[in-house]
Image (spheres, rainbow, N blue to C red):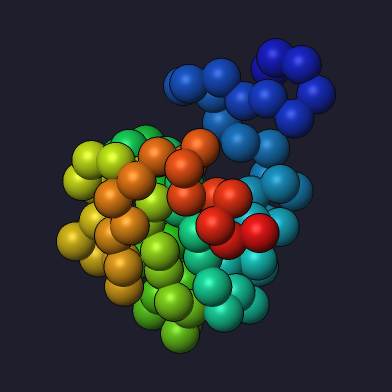
Amino acid sequence: MGPAGVVWFGEALPAADWARADRAADAADLVLVIGSSGLVHPVAGLPPCAKERGAYVVDLNPEPSGLSSRADVHWRDSAAAALPLLL
């Protein structure tokens, strides 16, 4: 594992962190997916699971991602341009 809080591609997520992420997805009303390809699992499975549990999912990405078709909204913009509008 890399520095604290970093999991490199191909490494397993620590079980406690994964459980916390799953609980957060279960409880979420809104999920913002920002700049993700939506292709790297298991994390890419969290937004669809949250949606199945009633969350509203926004995919913020300048290009379509692996999650765009399953999100409630695909906001086609860069994070640098869009995030200030949300704050």
